[in-house]
Image (cartoon, rainbow, N blue to C red):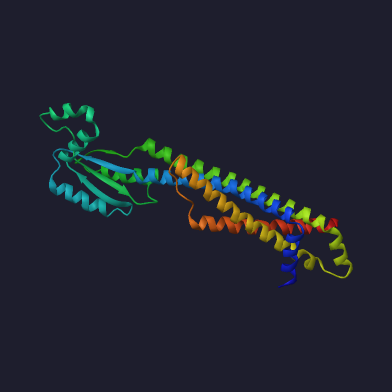
Length: 285
């Protein structure tokens, strides 16, 4: 076993309480970040599901011919942003209205003529559901003389975009704050470890040990502490997810790459924070 690794393991054995406190402190710092990540992920998935419902509806004039309808469908399918096109006949539109608005069923059934227009429902591809793209597609449809009206929920779509921006900004700011807290906790734990072993470090320097030789065990301690803290945080976050999913509301677990990145981030934070703390505080020993 390399000397640095052996020293790091020995330090864990000599000061198990300090090691446990360091791992738990890091774990809870990352755990809070994981809870925020879980919340942000489910908010994003909810917004994605809302965006999937974004569609452009072109209402056709009653005198539109079958040839005009076929031409419109062919040309619409050539638009790169369009994922699918669905024709809704007047009869189908009335049947849907009767099914969805039961309180007006008697009114609909007593009508002598169907007042609802036929329409084309366009669903857009992911990444093409922003207001500018949707409005451009809607404007193109409105240019056909046999299209009476085009609707796409401009206000609703704008609110979705605003919500996505707010969620993204909050994720960056709060996520960065949690990362800073985790780094401070690890750095503080390493500082305590350095001063707890200052006599040992002084002796090592007296016999000719370089700063790099002294520093390496502490770097490994920070790396291992951060890794263990990341694993513990992932376990706590998964437990919280299972409880919330079973008791409160159905939510989705974090993507596996996010979990791996979180555990790796704990190890990286531990290593970097240890490096900064050791470099600074070895000068004081």
